[in-house]
Image 1 (tube, rainbow, N blue to C red):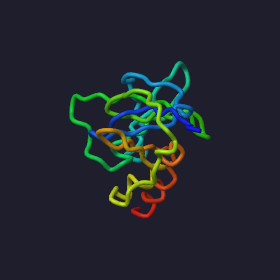
Image 2 (image 1 turned 90 degrees about the vertical axis):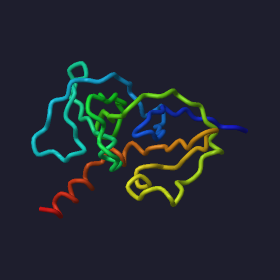
Image 3 (image 1 turned 135 degrees about the vertical axis):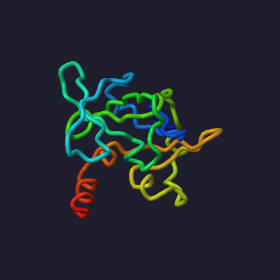
Image 4 (image 1 turned 90 degrees about the horizontal axis):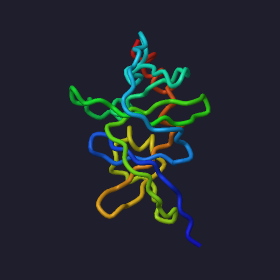
Length: 152
């Protein structure tokens, strides 16, 4: 019996990522950000989502990829976490893909450790890999805070 799951896809620095559609609250165009003083660099700011304050994380910084080119505005993938909604700032929103769970594979060892620690695995598509992000790990700021404490 084939079991399929749906993945909400997006791109970051030319790479295709996705999260389980059940974790996604909504996707939005660029929203005005309010900066948070002394926050880790991965926290781009806060957005007001119909009266709810949501932390926006820059996935380029979270994945330690090059910064977004000037004049290029990010899109928001708002995901539900155990701590409430958080926004993942991405370059482009893709499609919702239905993938066969039997095609799911663990992350290849050739991926950078900073990427591998945030993904649950990959799906091989016809022309590229779809890297599936674990939203709880990606939005967990505790490891980032400990890195900052070690530097101080």
